[in-house]
Length: 193
Image (tube, rainbow, N blue to C red; front, top):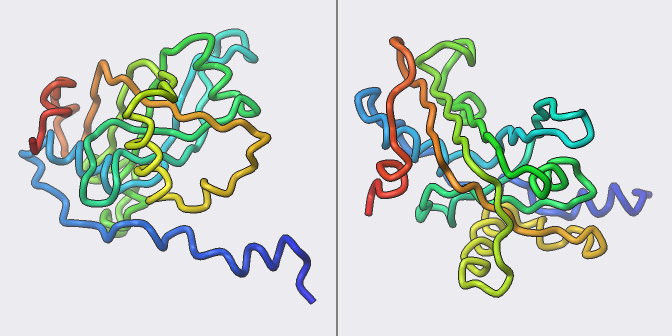
């Protein structure tokens, strides 16, 4: 007989059930398209904050996110975080944050090393902000998060999860040899409109 935890895990749909099929990667000459592609295709990344527990040292944490419902990403990462986790606590004290994504988990890099410049990597830097629960953005963010990560809807209510978003101030993209590609936040956010 299965324990209650194993039974719950066995009955839960796979986490990948709501994830989009990976679309074709843009050409290296299309830096903004590549950055938006990475944000739309990935479902998790490393969110780094200025640690209040570690005297201001950087702290990176693997987190799930969404930039929109599949096929309708808008580039702004939304996160579902609890202050039981240091990432949310840190952001409430110091909003400075970076969020890093890699192409490698998508399976499109082949057998090359994740650090190979042709395996794209994106770091969005800015401020991690709470989304106002009274704003229309809350519905958009919930839809984006719960579509890509359906199990989030059932996470414990007594953990007081809140929706955060990254207000992007700087973009760092490597998707080919020759160093980072310059992309402004306005180019990134207005792409595809």
